[in-house]
Length: 136
Image 1 (tube, rainbow, N blue to C red):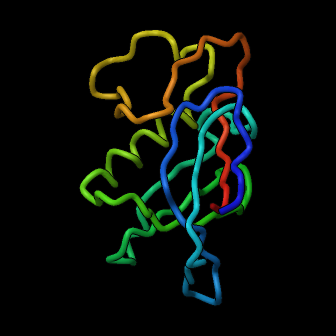
Image 2 (spheres, one colour):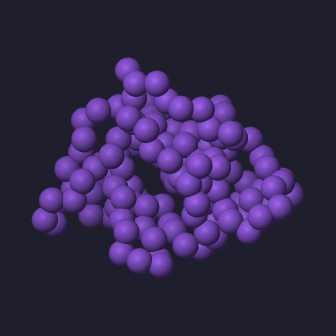
């Protein structure tokens, strides 16, 4: 297993494998993976969306950027698939909120799920959280 580099602050972490687009199909990389949302990659608010791929009956999700054509596919590897929707909501919560408001109280409907390694931040910049993928 590879060492996962530490991140200054991890707001959300979950197990997911990468997938690659081959023609019109996505093919999984069967290795174990880890997605962390923290401070290592820049994603601006409302620049990206993380959502379930409706054409798949499996646990396939896509990270799409609105500023260009970048698309990243993942298959969730968490043991409990009942939390997939909650993970998706939490990813969107963190990648689309400026860091300076993460410490402020949000309405209950938009509060992310509690997961190990998740912290709040009140940084003074206009960028949102960061999305980083590691192979385990």
